[in-house]
Length: 249
Image (cartoon, rainbow, N blue to C red; front, side, top):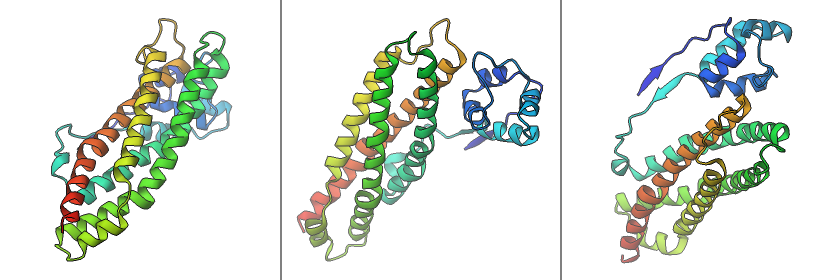
């Protein structure tokens, strides 16, 4: 894992900082610093106008643009089953809980300003709201029921517990149904959002709000694809294999 640090120039225009890295939009939104069409102030001036501590805002900006690179060659299929479940919760579920509300705010702001120009934005927002609401429910179900069951079953299996087969037959959870439901929901929404946005392609006259929303949607798309891969292609086949073996005991 590699960390990349980036310094923010407090004399740089707010618009320049945003276009360098769209993730800074969350900080600007937090402090009500305009980053769209009227963003012509240097960061220091924008902070002074609002009575903000430039050093504090600058540090938060540097925190959000910090890049952490993770190897794409991670041997997911070799990870212990418990670790895969924990990874999904602490990486992908945590990402969704933090970023879905922020993205919803950016999307609502963009729609309010550009609805007449882009009539399809209402449909995009409806797909996003559906994804947001359903994913929250599915994540709770996984964390409170599905993943604890997977961990307990896997531990009984790996420890050769004599009651493992009975445990699976009596306490089995709908792992396959939940994961398939999640996969179907996410793929339907991603397909619709990709079509509406032409795969998140910015038009030539795109404003900065447009840029932020599309970059965040693309980031969400990428994260959900890996999330689904881990659940459907790594976690689920191993769970079903263990359950089949235990039911024979």
